[in-house]
Image (cartoon, rainbow, N blue to C red; front, side):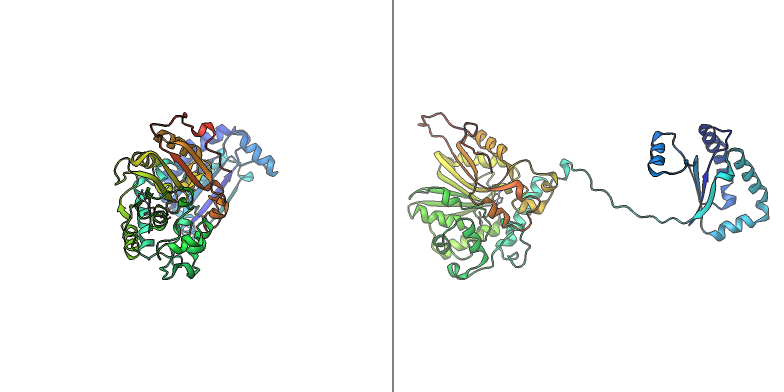
Length: 426
Ligand SMILES: C[S@@+](CC[C@H](N)C(=O)[O-])C[C@H]1O[C@@H](n2cnc3c(N)ncnc32)[C@H](O)[C@@H]1O
């Protein structure tokens, strides 16, 4: 299509309002009525705004006075237009329009020419963040289950899947743990596991999915009952079993069937008779009330859309005086909306990190005392070792979360985070 552009200046005896009124209410309807005879396809008037913005535009660019209006008429082609104009039967109509134009347009100071439109389609601007954009809890849960299911079944490995964080990694099956020198062992060393820890766990139990070493901060005693929330393939559960000895007991809970199957196979192959793995969600633990001495967990609770039921359940199953020793990712402050909208960052243990102050409040409300939430000593090294954290890395830290369920014989008043038990993250 081609377009006739008519940049019009009003006659000197007219005000801008007179010009606009005549063009809009007389000339426009006149052309509209005869447009079919002109074979015109489209007709648009652009009336210049009477607004100081136009003075500003003109002076900032050093331009001349604006036109009073710009008319546009479209034809299929120049040939179409010429056919109409050269048609002798159109002579009267042409004369009518030129006469009418001269009543309100200063033709000598106006401009008229044909153009061809070149349109640049503009990308849709990103929609402002809304609560609806954040994945809903069920979407997060099923993505977490899918991701860790494929890691457990070996479909995603360090080689085959992009590694976004601790939770994005998976180790290929390694027949000889201690001497393999594989990436998950190296990761375990960064997280604070000793060579003895690495050597003591069954092959395939360490999938490189943690963000700390909860057993190292749990002060486990011989004979205790330990619960591992989100036990994965059993790495920490097996280390806890070594610490509590044959008279102790370890229960691992995980919601991903492939993980539970892998952990059970690891236990059976290596004779861990005091370790048991149960399928279930840690928001509704398949564990009786008040039977656990210590709860451990490694890089799991951040994956739960709602942390309140997790800590409520932890409180329920602990014996009075029982403790939690959790490694997890915690946020220094509220994370940006674009992070919270990213499902991969959720299942990658970043987007679900709870702000420090909120986490302390959740623990207090669940009933815990002696709450400590502190950055792991090499938190920066742990977080920086994850590949895709550039936009989030500075906003989160690898945390150690410690707390105790009060016992009836507690004499000292319970300390809470406000009393100084929760150092701020550095
Ligand atoms: C990052 S991996 C950590 C696994 C293990 N703690 C480790 O360090 O190797 C997270 C694990 O938590 C499990 N998980 C995530 N959300 C859970 C929930 N709400 N209930 C039970 N398990 C969950 C996943 O299935 C996955 O096995």
